[in-house]
Amino acid sequence: MTSAHAPEVGLSVVHRRYVPYSHAHYAGNLVDGAYSLAAFGDVATELCIRTDGDEGLFASYSDVQFRAPVRAGDVIEIEARLVRVGTRSREMDFEVRVVGRGAPERGESAADVLDPAVVATTARGVVVVPPRG
Image (cartoon, rainbow, N blue to C red; front, side):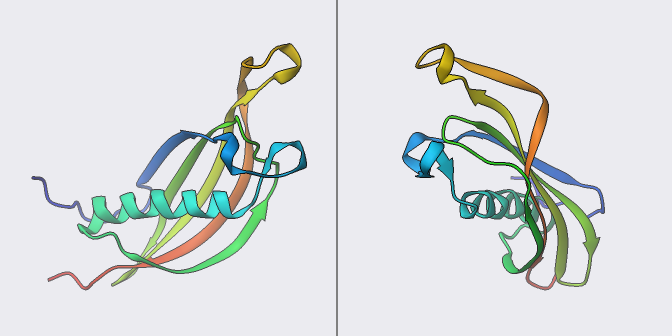
């Protein structure tokens, strides 16, 4: 077992996942914005585990922006980057990028890699962790 490392500004965690069709919520296979926020929670949890040995608890989101759609069949990349370290708080910038997208006009299972990726959602959030001791 390894212990947590001291939290350093600039440290980031990235996850990738396929967005299943079961998460489509609107016409055009659009996924609701809460999907991105849940993904932010997952990367924030890992970042807190890496820096503090604890999952932490979300305190707030600010400046959430939905810049482009996330659709069922997308492959997304979710990043949390540590931007401020307080005594018990960890402020992070978040970004969801669409790196792959289904192309149903070419066939049921056709898909493309998006290069460059499409920035879909951004936010800033604060997570609190237990005191170091």
